[in-house]
Amino acid sequence: MAVISVEGLTKTFKVVRKEPGLWGSIKALVKREYETVRAVEKVSFDIEAGELVGFIGPNGAGKTTTLKCLSGLLYPTGGDIQVLGYKPWERKSELQKQFSLVMGQKNQLWWDLPPIETWRLQQAIYEIDQASFKQIVAELVNLLQLQRVVSIPVRKLSLGERMKCELVAALLHRPKVLFLDEPTIGLDVVMQKTMRDFIAEYNRKFGATVILTSHYMEDVKRLCERVIVISQGRIVFDGKLNQIISRLAGYKMVRLIFGQEFDQRKLAEMAEVTEYNFPQAVVKVDRKKAAAVAAKILQEFPVADVTIEEPPIEAIIRSLYEDPKILADS
Amino acid sequence: MKIRKYWQIAKISWSNGLAYRLNLVMWRVRVVVQMLAGYFLWMAVFNRNQVAFGYNQAQMLTYVLGGALIRTLVLSQRSVDVQVEISSGDLNNYLVKPINYFRYWLARDGADKLLNAVFGVGELAVLVILLRPPILGPVGGQNLAGLLAMIVGAMMMYFYLSLLVSMTTFWYPEQNGWPQRFLIFMILEFLAGGLFPLDILPEPVLAVVKWLPTSYLVFIPMQVYLGRVSGQELAVSLLIMLAWVGILKQLAQMVFKRGLRIYEAYGR
Image (cartoon, rainbow over all chains, first blue to last red; front, side, top):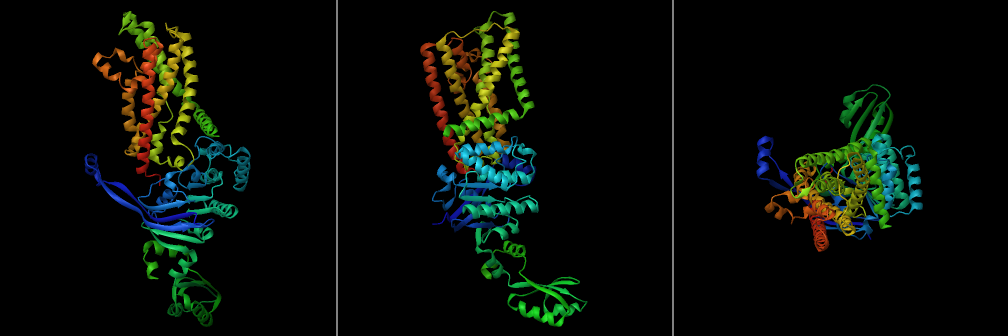
């Protein structure tokens, strides 16, 4: 049975419309005009136990709204959601003890106290016995190298340290389901990698089901086999990441290093040159003809080295965000 | 295990309160200044008169100082933060956890009030020793017990009243709900009898004010202490108070449920 099952989820919000300027403000004081905004519309998907799924889409696509519905913060306007067999908006403690929601831009740590105080509070809230608490904290602190920061007030910690402490707070009760909303936002590349490795490790070790949203494609590439792409409140793709690549990228990139100067125009006749900076050049060629074109270039030009690469995932995803219909057309 | 949950909340609340030393000192100075202001005002009034508004000097000063102590216990609380949590979306942190939001704040308020009681009694003792005002002791055991029960009831009433005000932020989240709170609490403090005994008001006004739940916050408890409400009247007052606690609790829970329906879990 699926751990998470979403069927036709729709969520709308009522937003105040205000005309710009002072006059608009005065008018809004007397009479408010509301507009109904559809944040997500007829979203459906199932997630099996132990899956680590990337939930991606441009800003305002409905990712966070979906996660908020899944964790019971929002009541769906329509459709049905089941998480571990419960309806999240009923907020049953049996369910709440089994999942965690981490938002990269939200804090649950007590700002003026050391993180250990928040962790102890979490221990009480989730009714974790002392022995398990000690063991889990020791393990997580060690894994995330937090020994130095445990007793320092949160406000004195760096963003990266804080985020790691947030993760500890969210994982103390060993949740079976983890909703991670932009857990790496604002972190430097080293810290991003630490977080990624940790998430992968948690998923592997405890068989936890994880939904991750991120704007960093590197997170998704490294962590998620399956991705769900959402755009303007609707799911536009649900499947393996490499499927998007093969479906959307009908081309490959051939990277060439030349041994000596040559006539560039001749190269341009054979393939589309996307980058040229002697001795290096990159050409874009039809996926099916990539090998043949590369062989021909090797024959006719003074090539020192050649590699055939997949196009960058960022570029593919960008094109998908810009025009969600391209998947249907491909 | 459940008790442990809320005890831990009380403990972290204390740690947090004590984390800011300057804030702690300022807050206590504010309370003492307020107490002194009422004290000196009424001293001045009674310099000219033996009896004013049906109170003699000792009764009035006892009302003012005792009322100040009750005010520091009843009309102060941490749970004003509820409105900020609703409008900022920090409420999310609690909604996803196996914890009752009302009880969470009750535990924090309880902790806060215990801290207030320790400081309040200490400060009052110092003032009494320094100023030697002519204050009255309790009229009897029954009244003292009645007062203590009333203080607990008043705290609960105020807790739910305050939650109700905070919950208006679900519908009007502007400025974290401060505009509505300032207005309502100015009126509330006046109607509670925190500044002066309500029975010095003109008869028609008093007739209305007496029936409002707010008079049970400071005024009636102090009347009990002074022996102006005793016996059967005390028992009736306690029952009315209990009813108010029940009504306000039900109302707060109902409004919270409705609020959550439209809550948008802001913060992104």
